Image (tube, rainbow, N blue to C red):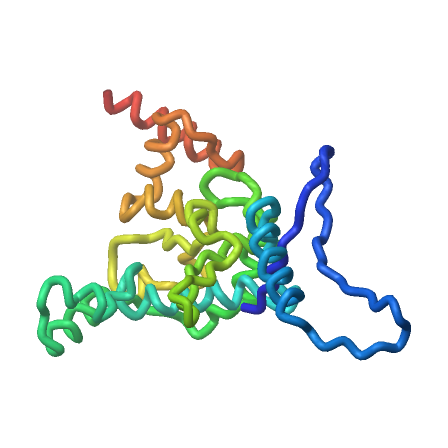
Amino acid sequence: MNTKSTWKIRDANGALYTMNLTYKAVKPGHKRIASKKMKLMAEDFNELKKKYGEEIITISKSSNPYNRLAKIIKTSATGGSMGFSTRHSDNIKLTKAEIKQKREEASRYISENITAEALQKKLEVDQEGLCYWRGIKIDPMRVFTYRGPKNNKGEYSPEPYWGDECEAMSADRVKMVGSKYETGYRLDNIVITTRGINKMRNDMEHDKFILALNRQGISINPKLKPLLEKLLKNENKES
């Protein structure tokens, strides 16, 4: 993803201003050669920007959040939601053969129709831009939550929504029990929600999760209300 970082400062009304240090020669046409004092001033200015300003990170319009989501789905399909990477398996001292077996056990079927275009249609057209479970607006750009690699100073270069993973869009499998194909990542078996809701659900069965959300007083997508009413009636009959 292409991002741009700039430091800006706000006025009393909260409006952002760009901060620049400029030099203008008294004598027109003079070619500037930076002196030691000018370099020191530039260093001080950069420190002041960080002290009094705020870092604004913008995402390039060419960055496609649905490409990122498709990549995340592929990772999850390969070895579960954590991707069962070697990094995680090192902590429990597994052999390479055991790692391979664990990845195969955790893997899911993934359809070749899971593309960025199909995921965009799923959210923006089929779900009208709303979370399947809660019916609240999802901002696709919030999928950019990676911490990023370290630079030569040992500092990370986080994406704009690093630390806000809870609101990142996420693909949730509707059917959790059955064969790998039935419970896999197919367009007719996934819905778009947020990572927080997806983790909350874990592997809970579809209808049970709707009831659980209702019991906790969490808002539910109006399109799921008829099903909720039916489930509540059945629950009352059984009791």
